[in-house]
Length: 457
Image (cartoon, rainbow, N blue to C red; front, side, top):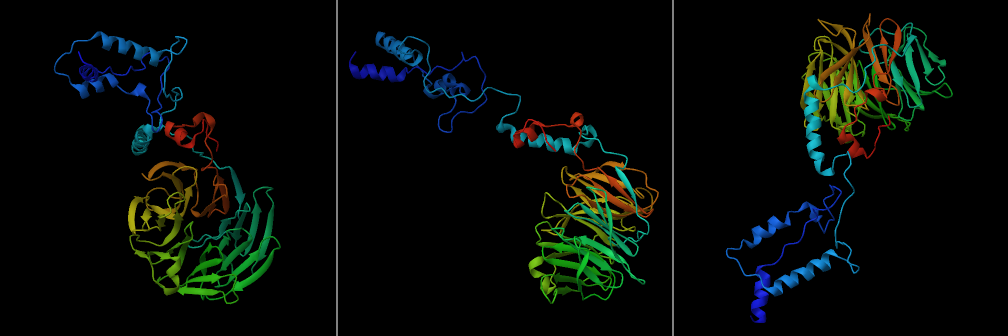
């Protein structure tokens, strides 16, 4: 047989590479980005499918010798010990799933969320209060917003004609101001840096106070009616009034009035700037909800006018983990919590609570939202209700309240929620607090994405 015929025979009967069947350890790493892990390949089957020989060739002595030499060089080192060339292995398998299964785990997580009846709750919702403080003289009015908890961990609350500061660190209480005559604070709001406290009054006054020196900084003009709602966006303070107007005040400028909007046809009782500061949500007593873009407010051109509620819209809360999602709550005749896509102006979900919604607070640690309720036609009267997002199924209720809830706000760390109630009390709830170690359900998906073995909250 000549040399050319010999090589043709060799090519037609080429020996397939050996697989790593004898490896004592299982591996789940898919290999190097350029050189795959051959233990994951069925090379024998691949070779058979590619060659698909239809006739047998006689095995020559040359072929047998060549194969033996090839095997020895690939399998044994210079000292005749077993060896492997270019074998890439990942780390041994652990209890944690591979990154290849992330999408599958996400689907499993979604399925668990949708099937609330079979889900095991991974944390305990407290039924009792952490602390109760007396609040004599607190105004029992659905439209006012008389509480604000600043980043300095100081809770400001208006009690009748007086405004007090309660320090949650040392439990000290200080009176900031006292109003004479028939006037009283109807709106309280800390600035983002918690250095300035904005106070709106029944008689249309709006003041800025330095909480450290207990001094009045300045008074802002522009309204002619009660100021029941205020909201900060950097150096811009937005106020809503019974005179139906919304005013943006630039607190740095001598002439504080930056822009004035008159689109609501009744009292503006709800104001909330988005976390990014690019959108403002305003609710009115005429049952309307407006969404404004910060860059276009001077032209009084709104982004969306939403009329799905059938009662006053006071409770507003922007979602902390989806920037274009807003929650709104209606009054007694409405009793609905609505979740909005503010980019499209569409209602994502609507839950009928059959009770007046006086406040909404998002849980920053879990995908939940808490609602505080007042009067009711049938259920949820004077209750705190916790809802799972985005399914909006009820997780539970907190406490037994003898009177309606007026306002809600949460602590800077997002753990505690305080409710102001018409029975002249402030009740503190650790409803957003971290779960206990024994009740924590740490999923494979959470562990894989966070790269932690334990959850620290």
